[in-house]
Amino acid sequence: MDKDIEKEIDASNEEEATIIPEQAKQQMENYLSIKEKERETNEAIHKENMKDLEYRRWYYQNQIQKHMDMIPREYYYQAEYEQMETLCEKYQKSIATMEKEEEMEALFKQFRKKTAKKWNANKIIAILLFGFLILFGGFLIYLLILQNK
Image (cartoon, rainbow, N blue to C red; front, top):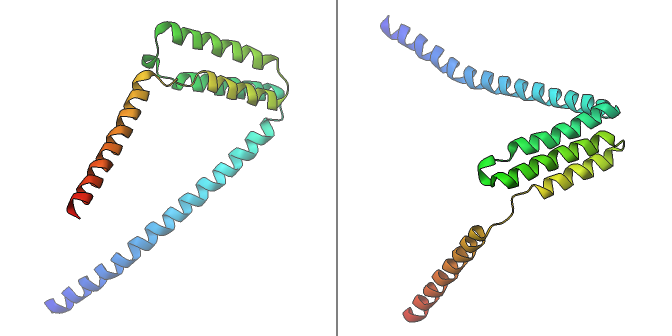
């Protein structure tokens, strides 16, 4: 009697063990298909909205502001950051007068290039030092190989 009950429990556990991964896989596929449909509809809505001049202006001004918000204030001197803020305002005002999407896109890319973090001397020195250490290590390994021959 007890053995029959144990066999039934084991059989039900085996069924659950095979059903659960299949359900999880199905749920993941459903989730991914829903997200893909959402992305496609959002892209279609965005394309349709980009035909409106005011939306285009708002979109690129918002992109500039998002880019400015992502720049960590701590990495720059106060004067540098204030200069970038005035540049941001200038570019946003320029976009407000533009009508062509290509011009707005070019202005946004130009803004991103101007506000990109410049390579400072410490980074350049660190990269050169790292390269030198790799070359020196390779030279030592080469000498060890020659010595063993």
